[in-house]
Amino acid sequence: MNASDPAVVDLIDTSPVASVVSDPRLPDNPIIACNQPFMDLTGYDESEIVGRNCRFLAGPGTEPWLTETIRQGVRERKPVMVEILNYKKDGTPFRNAVVVAPIFDDDGELSYFFGSQVELAEDAQGPSLTRRIRAAEKIKDLSKRQLEVLQMVASGLRNKQIAWELGLSEKTIKMHRGIAMEKLGAQSSAEMIRLAVEAGI
Ligand SMILES: Cc1cc2nc3c(=O)[nH]c(=O)nc-3n(C[C@H](O)[C@H](O)[C@H](O)COP(=O)(O)O)c2cc1C
Image 1 (cartoon, helix red, strand yellow):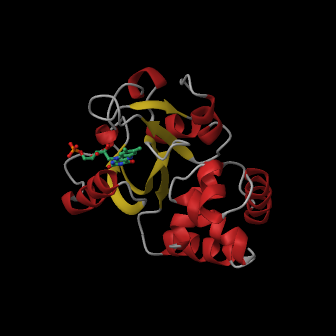
Image 2 (image 1 turned 60 degrees about the vertical axis):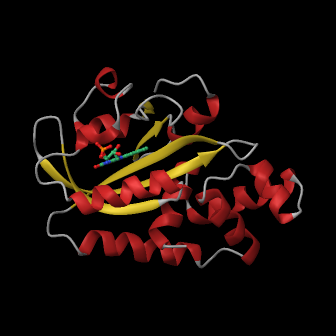
C-alpha cells in the first residue's frame, strides 16, 4: 500500500482480490496504490508497480481489442470487465478477468480508477461463468433500494452524491450500503464494485 488519500487505502487494503488504484490526473494515469494480493498475483514488488501505468501486464499475446475495451472504459469513465491475456513478472501468461472502474469525488470529479484482477484457469469458460453466476445470485438477495445503491457505488459515486441523487440522507445511504455489503459477503467497497460488474448490473 502506498497512498496519501485514506479513501484509496480503504478501497483496496482489506480486499483479498488483487487490486490497484490509478490517478488519472497524473501523466499517463499511473498506479498510486496496490495491495498485497496484486503483488502475489503478478510477482512484482510495490516499488516496481507504483508510478507505472498498468500496461506492464500486457505482452505479445494480449488481445488488442480487449485492451481497446479497457481504454474506452477509461476514456468514457465507465466500468468495464474483460478477460484478457496478461503476463506475470517471470513471463508466465495468465488469463486475467480484470475490472476497471472510475471513482468520482464528492463533487462528481473523476479522482481515481480502480482496477481488480482475478486469474482464471486456462481452460477458460468455467471459472468466469461460475463467478458471474455467483455474483448474480448474491445480488438477488438485495432489496430494490440496496440494488440501486450498489449500482451507483459500482459506477464510481461516493455516498454524498448517491444521497443527493436519491434524495436521501448520507446516513441512510451508509446504512443501505452496509447491509448490501453484508448480504454480498464483501469485505470492501472494491469487492462490491467487482461483484456488481461481474453480475453485469
Ligand atoms: C486502474 C487500471 C487498471 C488496469 N489494469 C489492467 C490489467 O490488469 N491488465 C491490462 O492488460 N490492462 C490494464 N489496464 C489498462 C492499461 O493500463 C492500459 O491502459 C492499456 O494496456 C492500454 O495501453 P496503452 O495506453 O499503451 O494503449 C488498467 C488500467 C487502469 C486505469
